[in-house]
Image 1 (spheres, rainbow, N blue to C red):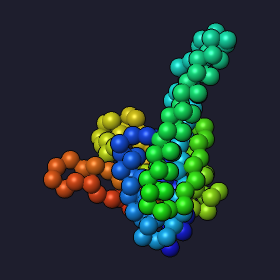
Image 2: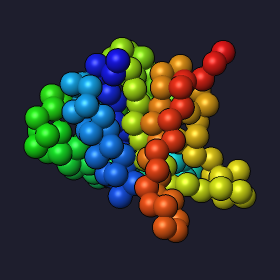
Image 3: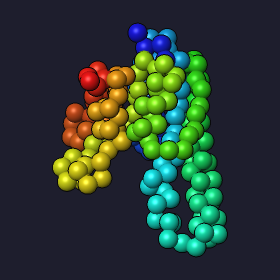
Image 4: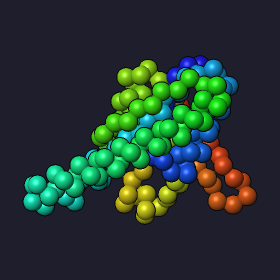
Length: 166
């Protein structure tokens, strides 16, 4: 059913919980896992547009290098978890727009499930900031498992989208 699972990570605690859930799913179904980190070019480079070109180029190179390193560390943590569980895993880091790239890479890799963390923002904050998980759930034809930490005694719950219907 889920032969190939894409675990999207940003290195946060929410993503690590999602990775744990994705690896549990992989153990259950005998799946291979791809750990993905997307360097968000829209958010990180936008404010540098007005700087003098050479200064901006140097800053962008530094930011890019830092984010690539963060991506390497985040995907490595998923890789270690998967290997401990005996799950085949590959790591991928790309630059782009997270929601779009998660969906694109899932399609290109013929993934059967996308697993990701969600911070659970609601109301005005969600309206103003948007949510990568929300965008993926709304736009993906591939099923999406969003793992959130719910406040209160209920604990962690899974929110599974069957994939967008177009």
